[in-house]
Length: 264
Ligand SMILES: NC(=O)c1ccc[n+]([C@@H]2O[C@H](COP(=O)([O-])OP(=O)(O)OC[C@H]3O[C@@H](n4cnc5c(N)ncnc54)[C@H](O)[C@@H]3O)[C@@H](O)[C@H]2O)c1
Image 1 (cartoon, rainbow, N blue to C red):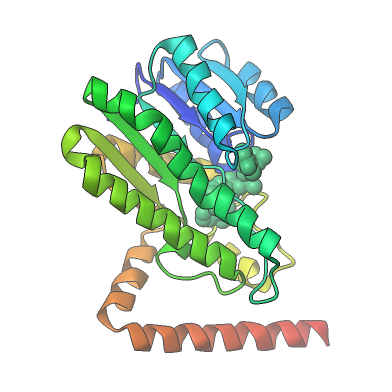
Image 2: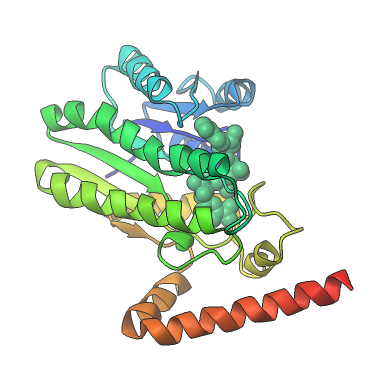
């Protein structure tokens, strides 16, 4: 799908990958770019910077009534939504010790948000015979993020939902893309975290990620991989799951030892 003349909503758009997607969409000639974020002030600032084809709408994607309001507001402004990008996402470091409240917030923001968006926009898209859902998942949704159990689990669920949506609505004109990057240089990469420092070794900029996302949307690819090596890792995992897990165990051990040396 071409971006020119389209109405596009991006969540988590005040910063990082979402902000870069909004900049790209305006440059590509979108009719309307809805810059949506729970940080309303920054969303308003970015929309003002982007000019008359951008507008800011506040939304905490973990709350269904906020997502419904975002969709209603966009429809009021433009009569339709062509592309809805569920991009907002968060992470909490940690494994078994992560609290239930942290897991719940991860579930709401990284997974339920995608369901709330699809529920709100799919009926209108089906009625028009076309529409596009883009979900920014993560390579952690295909592989695993050693430093965060809840991120790994919720991003796998994000990929699963995208796959289900594409399977069920693909023949009715609805395109779905699932974006699975490795490290992207945004606030999410925390240099105090050994895994994130490791990801930084091959990280790309948010602008590079946005360019890969729009290239994937133009080709209507389901799996958009801004880091092509992820496909190679995913194939290795599929070819020999046990071997791949042994490799991940070794990597974790190596990073843990490095961290212990740093701390000593
Ligand atoms: N940065 C990476 O290395 C990386 C890698 C793979 C996937 N991702 C995914 O890309 C997406 C964007 O991440 P980013 O790196 O740009 O992060 P970021 O932290 O730079 O930006 C995230 C934006 O989302 C907003 N946000 C957070 N919670 C929200 C909520 N509940 N409702 C609405 N907005 C909310 C924040 O205010 C912020 O503007 C996320 O889904 C993330 O999981 C990031």
